[in-house]
Image 1 (cartoon, rainbow, N blue to C red):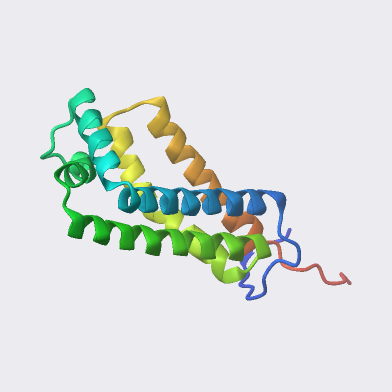
Image 2 (image 1 turned 60 degrees about the vertical axis):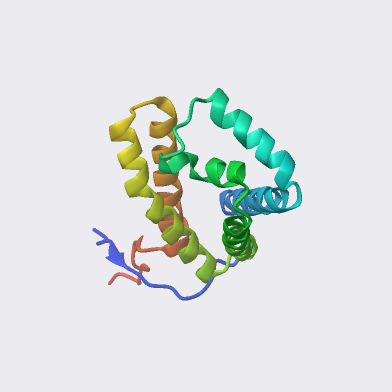
Length: 168
């Protein structure tokens, strides 16, 4: 009976899998989306202010709540705050794009980065599911958990049977 022992491997997978490449494309899409939003906020501040004001009013958002803060900043035309938000968006998207390239190439550092960034969201997803149970919150948690499990199972090789040696 083979015992499952942890096996550490520092080598990248020889051929990136289709799910790993799909994850790379998803991360790239998130990075490009944040770039577009950040550029849009800076380039079209006046238009964004009007849209944000209409959205805050339409959705009856309370500007004191944290989830409406971006709309409040845009609506108020706080340009220095917008520049900081744009800088944060650039850093976030740069990280996502770097991660996506690394995942596409099957690099070990990118797989660990993907696991780390996915794990960071789990407590927030659990909190969201507890506070506002629903299909979207449950789905986000399940998909994230599946991504984490897949990356560990397929690419980290923590639980792989030891190689078989000739039996006497």
